[in-house]
Image 1: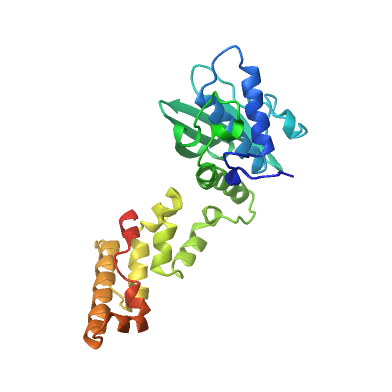
Image 2 (image 1 turned 135 degrees about the vertical axis):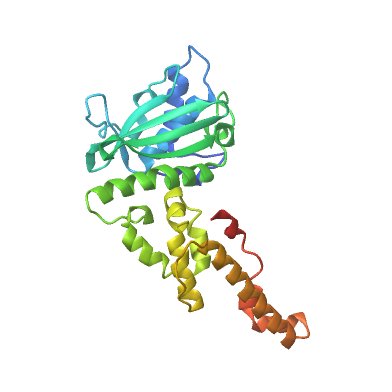
Length: 284
């Protein structure tokens, strides 16, 4: 059992697994300088293992029997002049390999998780190396890192959760992630959410944002919220919805202003105070 999660790391303490992997990198690369991308590879390795993914060796077998203290980064990332590449699998689904490729581009690293067995489905994210790796030369491992909570959430949301959901969906298992839900079910969920929640949801991943951008969805939301049944036509229904939403909010605010003489009177109208401009409109 892990004594600490990566997202709970501080400048004084990191998970034992991560510390052992980084020490392994430092020990094995004494003959040449350690770069920040090497440390980031070790961090990603620990993140994958922490989230119940297991490494596949060259013959397709697993290294699941290796105790955490003996993990070495070289088992996972075969560094050459180009990208660093390795292969993992979701525990219990080892017949669907997950090819993980980390490509350094200056101060950034692009991470791709490729499911070759699922029509080359790919999930990606881009990380700024110096945002998470402060130094590759300090002796104290926890001091090498910062903002690991953000790192953990980014990798989970953009790589680990979508990959797991895709594999579970392929085998017909339910998934805790919305990404793995069939589109017709997800459509029904969206039509039962308040528009504020839909705006928040579209920021979680590109797949959901693409679905929420659908003109037909906003046509249905317009009919739902404004009790009208216009023809779909060629209108931009997201724009129509936003304009109607702002008009309705301004109208309610005007009514309250006419009824109220002081700011204190607004306490009885929380729906008005909650209006203002929702910045999430710009994200969809």
